[in-house]
Image (tube, rainbow, N blue to C red):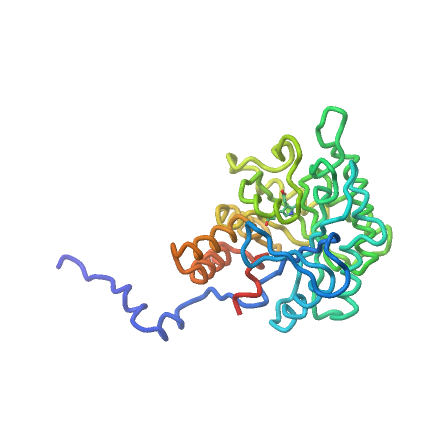
Length: 325
Ligand code: PBG
């Protein structure tokens, strides 16, 4: 033997040894549960509808969503993120930020019921509320008008904060969205409301099942004019930097598993909490793989979530949040 063999396997000799030498943990504290609220479901009693493409994920009416939130609180999950499906949509998404839009209405109930033991995050984007399904107001050429859209986001943020929402999460990739929201919040004395920016959001085919759930697929074209191309590596840090300058409190990378390098980049560059969004397509692949008995879905889910944490995520938004603990 020319040199001694380094015995790495000594670290793996027993379950106890493997546990002792592990430094990545996954806790309920790390997870955020997405909740879909559908205005089209009957208001009385419990009503929920399973999303075809996402086995195990439901859209809820208010009573049903409250029950799920209760479950999250019991499991010590610190936060939910809300998405709304309105009864009506129009060109400018005006049904999202008027009384009695379902997201602010539900948020007020959540705060009344759970107070500070549950953080209420609200996704903020026009695509669920516009008839054309784009993330902003359209110009006559069919492009999204960035600055007109900012005015709408500012008003949404104000309405959301008035309803008691703790964290506003703009997801539309408009330039200046964080600044517009921060200034609307501060002007209205909501200095304590935080902003979780979807800073680094790729134009991803992994969002397919979400668009099925939220009925928010664009009716023409795609989102490549505002979401990021995955063919560039220089852009992520720059996007995050801009959000920080504009006043974001938390950064997000989305999707998660195919973009672990980006999570790590942000982790290395900034002293900010980094959220990773394990998106609908990531979740759906695991669920369908499990159903087809290609693999053990629970094990694949855990492995994915650990990988996302190992890359540097502070918290993970996942549709599996209630299934892990
Ligand atoms: C709204 C929004 C989307 C998702 C989160 N917020 C859809 C999109 O950008 O098309 C996707 C989440 C998921 O796929 O789980 N803009």
